[in-house]
Length: 176
Image 1 (cartoon, rainbow, N blue to C red):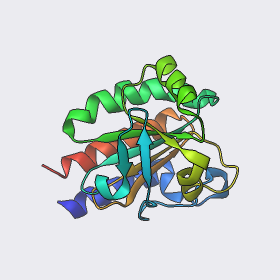
Image 2: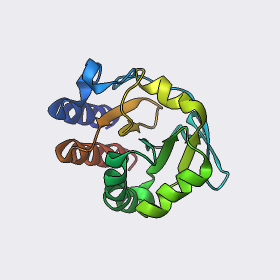
Image 3: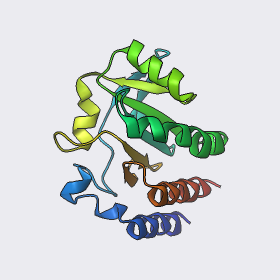
């Protein structure tokens, strides 16, 4: 079953062009199949999230910033179409704000109405592990139970967003 789920996610990635994330215009330093970079992040409530602690779970790292218009457009869709749909099925969604103080991040959370945890990324350390220098912010990194990257998005493209939802659904079905 795991192999079938992995092949389904890879096929979905290839259909939307996400598997070719090494293309320079995508701005990723990582690719589908790579292990997610190690991280330890604190959310606005002071809870610590780590790559090690999330192993065994399907999760999404959603890179964002208060000044990013595309991020603000995407976040309510992530809340409604991903977080609310899959949170009770075991998905963890973490916003990762690019190098902003907690007060700015709280303003972003209030403005967008998201309820998933949003973490601080001081100095943009995790963002720098995932992207090439000066890459755009709006990104989602879907990670499988083994801690490997299963899907990557860039900007807010409806077809790619739907493919990401399908990939998450497939990864979560694998636990049953």
